Length: 280
Image 1 (tube, rainbow, N blue to C red):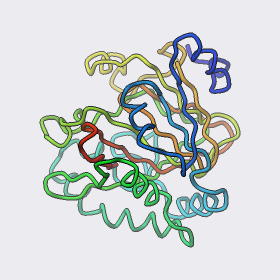
Image 2 (tube, one colour):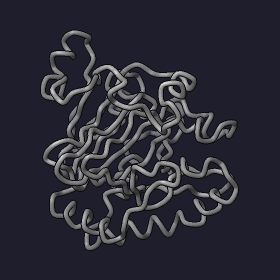
Image 3 (spheres, one colour):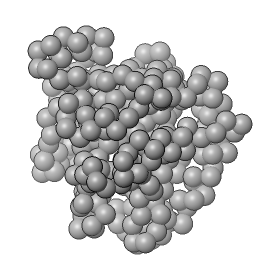
């Protein structure tokens, strides 16, 4: 059973010496490089933390802008609130797919407006990924249409984001753009974090789809209490960017005193000679 007293980033060094794995690699926005992506691909790192990717004042403005835009529950996960539409919500239903693609550009522009007078940190990250990856990076397309990128999400106090994995091929089975991925990462930029709670929790062991479905008992994810203690716990600071393997089971610890607000998207990897792609 998970309790807040188990392994945190502060004592991850003990685990590194035992297994030879750098659980968390630290860098800044000017040091982020292709080697960090490769470390995630190879499993040599679980998380890349880019400290202060967005500055404090910008984070305050963007967090307030997100709040002014208003958060709504996921169509299929009422416990978590977001701005924009996640591809996961479509469940490949024709009417929801049309809504997802029709709203994609509008939702991208609304987030940019929420960032004013600052530029969007999301756009900065997209440009950096394109710069650092030898084959470049670009917006994922599907059915000949550009996908949405930049889902704002809020985890409210006393709400737990259940343990789950994010696998594009499970959201779009049989579709080449999803099936062709050999690795998938989550990218989260944090604009408001609680003093207590809100940690990223990760487990090393991968679960098959059938194992996951059995353990989640009809919910979108697995209760943290039903899992062993997480292998990695990272408490993001305001402005941090975290990149991590979204195919591994992960969760968010319940914020205790204030909401956790962030913007997120996925990064798809198809080998070193192919461009990275991103979507939400």
